[in-house]
Image 1: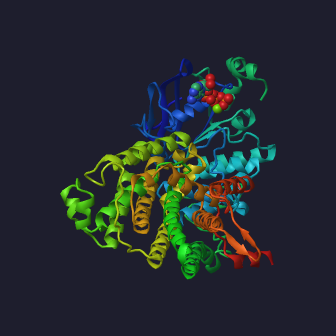
Image 2: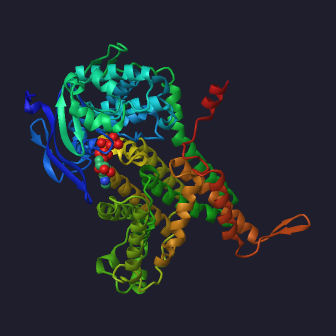
Image 3: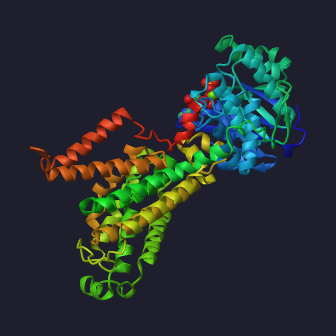
Length: 246
Length: 367
Ligand SMILES: Nc1ncnc2c1ncn2[C@@H]1O[C@H](COP(=O)(O)OP(=O)(O)OP(=O)(O)O)[C@@H](O)[C@H]1O
Ligand SMILES: [Mg+2]
């Protein structure tokens, strides 16, 4: 694997991070390029969410650096990174529960430099795209689970990101919804956005990702195309063997 | 992201308003929005007219209610929008009252009553509008100065830290005789420049300020931080900055409230600005619903009306052959019990934290 143009990527370089003795990350190197969908998989507690926190300014590494389009952005606060084109969703949703569905999206657009009219237009389009348009005036907390996840992605897209980091966005979706969702992810990447997709649904990962990065116990374990990863005996032992057939 | 076409839906995203809501928005939506300003302002105005018609103690109670309203609206701007507790806003009210008193008390009287004043404070004399402007500025400035230290805290820590501010300010105002009376004494002789008809205009002005703030970008972003503090930075929101803005505006409004208090009470003393006033304003806001301007207005109205009624009953009311009265000391018990019951029935306050809805549209939607 080669990095085509280091000035067009979001990269974690040699990341280590410990929490009061627990080594959550101990040597992660991963590069997300614009326009690709990169899968990030690993057993529970492997450090996937921790890595997303590092890449989005939610937490700082003890060692290593975060590079955005060739600039060292280690230690930048999350709100600044969001305005510089790095967006994310959360494993636990974290919607603005009592705000309307529309306001959830508009707020993210407003905070990243859109005018009121632009924010309104972006929100309308995104809510259509993610199938929440007819619920746009109700509070986000009233959404069914599947729409909740999609609203999280719509809100992230409202920041007009170059990189989109999705932490288990398909958890709890049914088969049909997952299929549609995969298509939406592909179409987002097709516009030039680099998408990092964390999910335990291996079928979804295999279907939409060009490359897959495997983390085990806080370390980059292996990376390759879906076919390479599927054929890896090491992966089966390290991951599938341990956490079942998810 | 400029344009995004999806195979799934064929929709285009970015920069294009599909105008789905156009039908329902337009003039009726604008009317509904304006009503959230006009409704509360009208109610405050009418309430004041009624109080002033009845006159006597009711008019006096009405004046204090307008002062409480300004403080409650001030607190709502910060706590309601950010979701962060503050037990310290009465500190801004206190410095506002101080500023107003020092500027309006006649210099000859001041020199006799407050002998240790800095000479520029002893000599200064200003008309009431200037004094109110200074009270507002002083409140806002103090809030802005302490905000960077307080705005990183959340929940109960924030509440207690702001309470610490109140303690410090209270102590300084009590003992620093270069800026006020000697230890714990009162500033008297504040001129009665603000009768009900002026007070109500200032109160409506504050309602307008709050309404304009609520619709500003900064308030929308701060409301998102209230809903989810984790997600807000990920949406590009700098939590601290928007909290500082709200805290400063809120402190300014509470400082203005202090000026109004001074003009209404005519006597200013540091012991007025303590836990009692703090929790009365918080109770008013929580009773009405912290999350809306309407909550601050309705909370003040209900609280003040009930309080006035109880004061009235304490004096004894003759109904035919009976004299209805409540025993001395029962007033706080009844107020407290009312608060408990109201919050049990409506945990989000009487308004549920919503703004006043335009009655006509609601009726039309039902039909
Ligand atoms: N803020 C924190 N404080 C303490 N420990 C943490 C913190 N964040 C993560 N950890 C620990 O780091 C390890 C990695 O957690 P992380 O959430 O990144 O795993 P994950 O790969 O996302 O797992 P899952 O698939 O269950 O979401 C875990 O042992 C976790 O307990
Ligand atoms: Mg995780």
